[in-house]
Length: 260
Image (cartoon, rainbow, N blue to C red; front, side):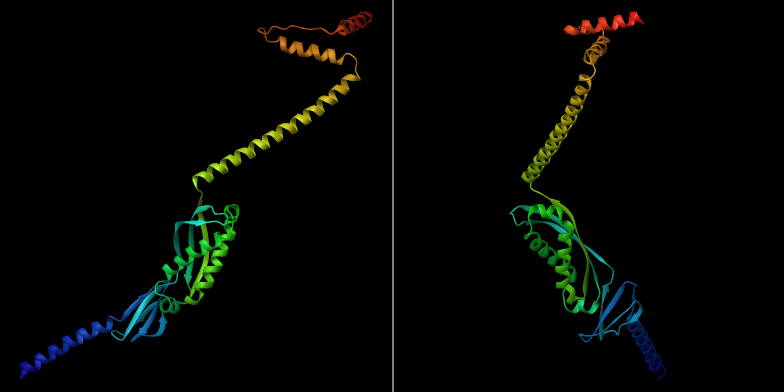
C-alpha cells in the first residue's frame, strides 16, 4: 500500500512539474519597440507590450510586431516617361506600423505590400511626366509617391514616413545626347564671353584712339615704346617702317631740348 502511495505522489509531482513548465511557457518578453497581438482561439483579443507579458498556453497565440521605422530598398526598375523614354529608377521607402492589430489582421505581409504599392506608384507618377521633369523634380516625384502609398496603406495601420529616389539612370544614347547638349551650352557661353570681351576691348581701343587724337605725337611715342619692348629679345629681328611725320616730331623734341 505504501508503495502505491509513493508512486502516486511521484506521478503527481511529475505532472505538477510539467504543468508548471507548461504554464511558465506562456511568459513572453516584448522589447520596448515591440508589441504582441494576441489571438484567443483564433479571435483577436488584445495588443500587449512592452515588457513581460503572459499568453495563456494552448488557448492564446501571439504575434510580435516591430514598431520601429522600417527601411525597404525598392529594386531598380525601368519606368517609361510621358515622352516615351525609359529610365531606370531606384528608390527607398521608410514606413512605420502605427496600428499593430490592423497590420496583422488586414494584410498578410505588410512589408511586401508596401514595396509593391511603391513600385506601382513610381511607374504611375513618372508616366505622367516628361524626362526633363523627372530629372529635375525628384523631390516632387518622391512626395507624390509618398502621398499615394500612404493613402492606400493607411487602413492597414501603416504610416509612410518618406520616400527617397536614390538613382536615376538614363539609356546610353540619352547620356550621349545630354553630354553633347552640355558641351554645346559650354561652347555657347564661351563664345558669348569672348564676344563680350572683344566689345569691351573695342570700346577701350576707341577711347584710347580718341585720347591719342587730342595729343599730337602720342601715337608715334606709343610706336617707339612697342619697338623697345620687342627689342628686349635679342633673337628678334625688327623691320621698322617709320611714319613720315615721326622725323618732324623727333626734330621738335631735339630743338626744345637744346633751347633749354
